[in-house]
Amino acid sequence: MVGQAEVEIARKLFEEGWSGGHVDAPLQFMTEDVVMRDIVGHSEAMRGHDAVREFWAAAADTLKVLPEEIYVADTGVVVMWMAYGQIPADAEENAGRWGTAEGVSRLEFRDGKVCLEVDYWHGGQGVCDDWEAHWNARRARPWRELGAITGA
Image (cartoon, rainbow, N blue to C red; front, side, top):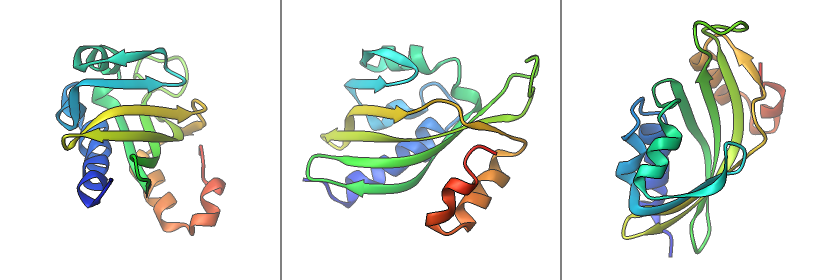
């Protein structure tokens, strides 16, 4: 059964883990044998901390994945999120700006940690100049209007 403790772990995984700015930041919230799937970014299941670390290393210092809503089920939670990744300074287009994407993650838990994460998203949706301004604009809108600001 999923309770408030698991909801808090899910929130922290995204706010402090995936948005933590360090390759090891999300691992503190995951079991050693975690299984992770990223539908767009990784075709095969990743198993264990080393696999997640390898997948995550290139983006860890410039990615923010912020939870918008958390839905609870008997076996886990679903987190709706908004992601921001900074485009490298040497990129030909949009250098220094932030790519945006939104999606959901299914999480299951064991012994107070995430043992399964499956991320569902469609890919990049646009760019913005300031991820914090974009995030704050999303948060200020009524829920039914969020689609109006998706991307840029």
